[in-house]
Image (cartoon, rainbow, N blue to C red; front, side, top):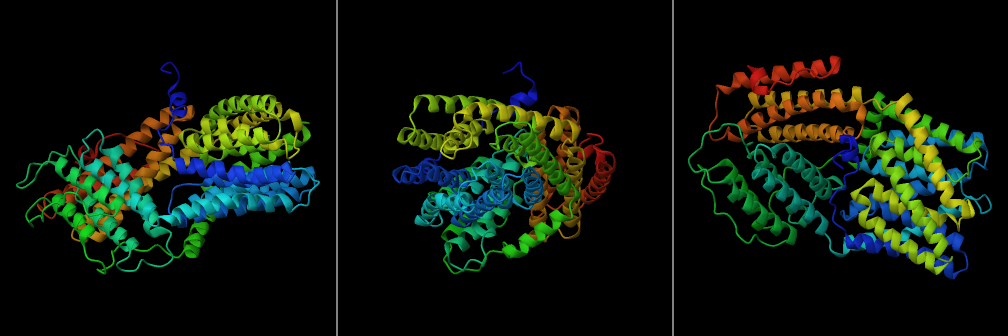
Length: 612
């Protein structure tokens, strides 16, 4: 692949995601139950309709804590049932279908910006609406939506039962992974610091969501969630006490090698995951020892602390309804979110009109292709086009072979069960692999539903080709994604947040709670920019802009490394002479943020040189 363009190589990479056998077993069993019941009852069409719900639940299943699983599994199921019902109510009228698809796409595009769970539910709502347009009009309008809900019920119950069978396991694993990420950060050198710091941010966000964010009430003192929240509270202090490498800091008395602290952190992580005491606990660190060593000692002490102690200071997020209302209001006031939603709605309306008046089989696959390619949360248009074309072509060949070789009935049910298991095992590694196993599942399910009969494979290829062409022309050439406005704005926000951290450090260097909160906001903003720039690597249009944006991101990262190191060492060796440089750095960051909002990236000097 060395001869291919960089954006193609980045798009085609396969992530090394391990296979979760529990997910594979639940997905296969969830698909088997409705199909077997429908076949045994002599109604394979009803079994296939219920299997759509099982497939939707299988795609959304995860190893998250039970609260997160309940939201991610149940809300998309209701969204899918609603979409199928809306699609079935159009009565086959072209104008009604086009208006419905445009309206649902607009709502789906706005909801996708609210949060991760709403994004999944909004995507299922849109896809199910399109699928509902292609369903046969013979059965009552409510039958397929009801079967969709019932079909996903076995897998939902299996997943929740797995989470509740060993309560706290997923939460302990999330916190342990956060500790391991911090251990990797302690071991980092100058070349790996930025990447590992982003990994810490993602791991801490995942742990915070698992332990705290989905709760409605605070954890009671002495309970498992309260102890895990205490671990996270102490881990925040470890992160704050970890200076960045390469800052030219002189050695201090009592400072040992960082490998020792990293080793202790990994043992603590193993103890958190298993719920046992650490195999080797650090000795109580004297007051005059290294600040990182003291923080690690405090973290280890939370494992053996008696229950019933004071609750950690990690704040409980607002109530779910209040969070939803606030996030929705923010999205409705965001012109970028409206622009993305209108772009998706326009592309979907045109796709549905082409599918209706072109004489193509009304399977809905054309509009589904456009939806999955154009939605910005799923990746850039060129990347999705390439992966969907490759995955669909290979998947159609698999589906065609299954239809040709396997007789209808139990043999095809066995093929569907195996393909669903493979989908659960490998879909998270690459969108091409997800499409590869999704396509033959939909091909085999389409025949009992009476959509296009024996022409299913050929229709899928034709719909995919036309859908990709429409998505490329409408969603990429004529109405491209507005990244040039969004990326500089996010970079400017990151610069402002780093400047706020510097100003807080100058005013109140002893307010550790405020500094910890600001530092978390800083690294969230930096991580969001880094993720966005990685996504844009799959779009060749941004090859020149990416270098300038990367320079701005590197400037903000370098500034935060210096500020974080100064804050970490301020307890041991405060340096008043650095106050002027920190003040100049804050002014420079504010100025660069203003330039980014007005004229885009500018310059690539390092914080140390420009601050002077």
